[in-house]
Length: 141
Ligand code: CMP
Image 1 (cartoon, helix red, strand yellow):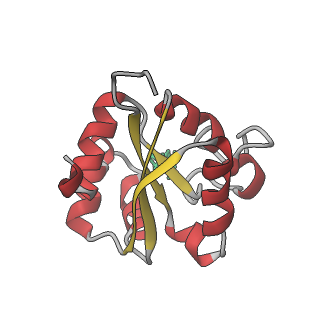
Image 2: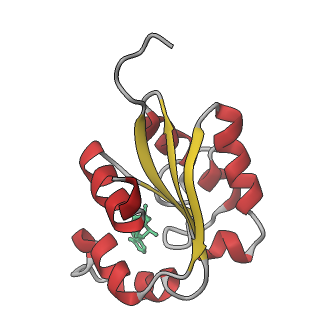
Image 3: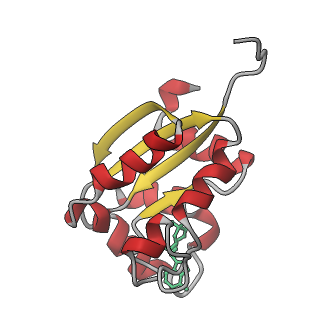
């Protein structure tokens, strides 16, 4: 490879609804088939304090208490993906927040009917990717 800069990274959470519904393999295979690389992956249940940090920009919003209950209510799968423009590419594969409105062909568009239980979280910018990767995978920094 002639590229001198390391590939961009993003943080993805395969949320408790996807784990409960047996969709982990389906979601991961979409990322793999796209050509993205899995740099780290772990199954764990999000502690309440980590939820408050991860969703710091949302803690005062009315939808946060039920979101926190949902996100801490069962195991999820956290992964770091890398590849060319991975942040935008993954957001395209995941689809818009509300599964009822997400385009068919996206993960949310194909499998979610909710704007809370929307299967996947993906970092929305280079700054949030850096912050979120440090929260979930401090050893990667
Ligand atoms: P996520 O990409 O993880 O970022 C914030 C999460 O909050 C979002 O996905 C949804 O799960 C949830 N969310 C965002 N907006 C709403 C809303 N209006 N009502 C309920 N949940 C929401």
